[in-house]
Length: 266
Image (cartoon, rainbow, N blue to C red):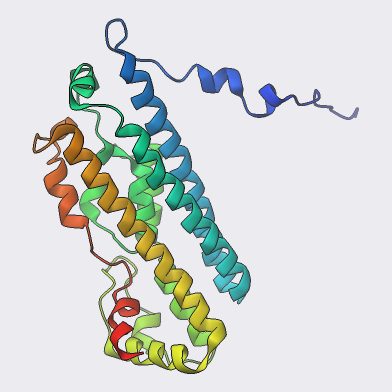
């Protein structure tokens, strides 16, 4: 059999530039100037969501392999990505409410609530809801991915298993907990974390990187809701969503409450 060879890659062929540039297809008449910006910003966010999932999965693999230093490095990368995502909201906020309304009706039922990748991020970080699955067609790529994430352990579960292998007395019930359940505060886990912060610099540093991730997600939520309020005010969101009213409910809600509860005890 002869060896199959691939043509030499160019910048355009490697990055699929022609395909990429064909994906921005405004629906408004004209089209309205700002619809292109709106499409590009949200497509870029979906790419960042894909990268966040890629990196969070890697952190979990590194924790399972007992590699805390490489886990910290990847968590720092995740925080940097989140900061870029927050900064990109500044670009979206250059679009005035009237400019958005010029093409908003063309979105029909399309809504950011339908971003399965962001829901996957929530799932892997412990914010799970079986109602989310009902928004996607059974058998679709989105449904299949979300169904897998819903049943799978979270980053917090991987973190607790790592601490257990570090000889910390993580209660067995936490190691065998229902991965679909919400992450609830635990006095036992909090006492264990206080011990880590007071006597184990290596793992205390890892804890701080997990706090960075939590804070980064909270910052993204806050800036996102303020952007929505600035753009559409109290209007109902596209696709029948509650818009800013729903988003406000998610602001300030920690992913990993035990890491915040101990701050006053250190």
